[in-house]
Image 1 (tube, rainbow, N blue to C red):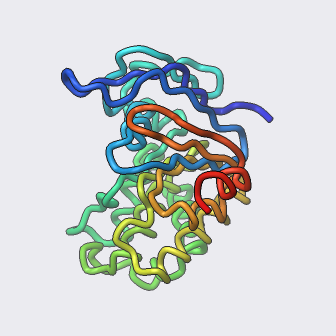
Image 2 (cartoon, helix red, strand yellow):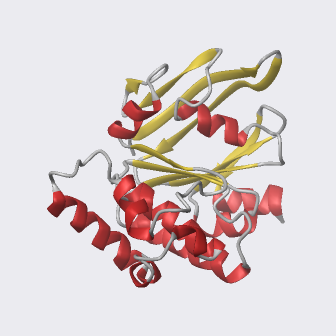
Length: 232
């Protein structure tokens, strides 16, 4: 398989505090890869570094064999890297439809047909969003807001979808639904990298994973190996 993302010897500081030290991992085409570990271990920092949201002290990040260190977040989005952030970060005062239109900002208003086509694709994946399309996003349940955050990211047709704690704050039913939809998105060809503190649920859908200690990767392996040696 082809590596679409390769992180090599990544070190990140917050001021004088070292958040990541010499971290390396990769995502192959068509994979779901999870980053597991306790709070403060550096998982979310790794995602932010990939997306250009925090400066990198040392190391390299390659996306489809292109070195992307130092590129701005908007340029990375246009290359196909899209992050669904922790806490969803939807536009609460805007409607569901307007949030999705914001997600398609790279299309531009002139290409209305493409924008509509992508929105219908999101609605087919999350039918409840179509029912709520004229509703203010802030009035949605937390589970519906998470669907909207994922849908907004899918408007960009990402080559790699990154998610930071997608199950955070969701009821068990919505957790099941969100991970079911992530598996569906992956089967349609989108590679996924997930930071998650619900290891059993994430391991149901992933192919491989990495376990973070404090700022370092302490284990890695395929799903069954992680279940056997680190989760059970």
